[in-house]
Image (tube, rainbow, N blue to C red; front, side, top):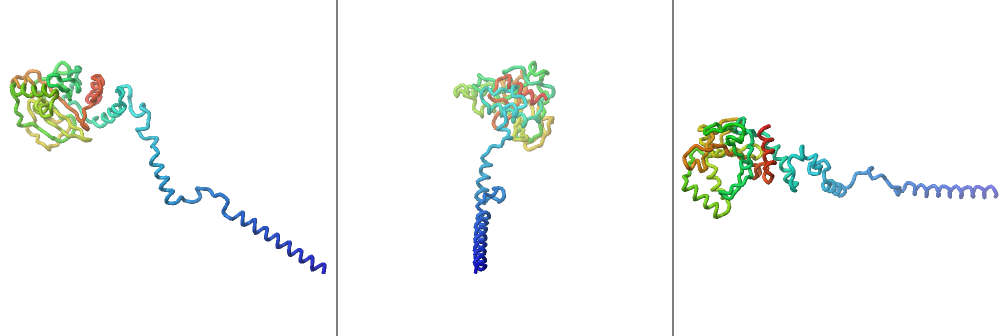
Length: 282
């Protein structure tokens, strides 16, 4: 009987041990132990949330987030004058018009502020929107009838083969309108530019060549031209001398336009001159 009792006790103890082991194992391997988050892919909802966060985070290497000194090669050359957007605009502009060259070989950017873009024009209540090439201020002699060349590759957008010079009476009448309106209407400004050629170039750049005496007879609207191609001759059309029928004060009025602005618009004469030099004399 004692032997049977011992066996029974042994059996009960063994069962208790097995039960305990079973309970512990269920706790250990129940999945309650934390898993690494990277071990399983995120759900569709999680992926969308993470992607939206990435889109909202600014790109640390994008130009707009770099210090000013890294955005511009020479930040001291064109101070912003309190307008940071103007500072950035000049650098972008220079890159887009860097393919242009002087329309008169050897001519330099004028030394006179009154012949720069942005110079006031009291006689018509407006401002000058281009660069003038006159003898005595551009480094070379400018003569009536001297050739003018395309400043860059492009397409002829406008060419005034049939230009008619207004007489002094008509000129006085349109200037009277400017005085009354205290502004220069675009149609009047167009007449005051005289005989013109307009070229369109890459990046939406437009160049205008004004006060011409003649335009190239072989060119028509839509024709392709290369940088340095002959497009016309220097004159004084649209000016008081042109209306007077003489050949005095010949010069080329040269404009560059991009996105509705001329290079350096809003800057000082010194800054504008330096900018145009970098484009046309390098």
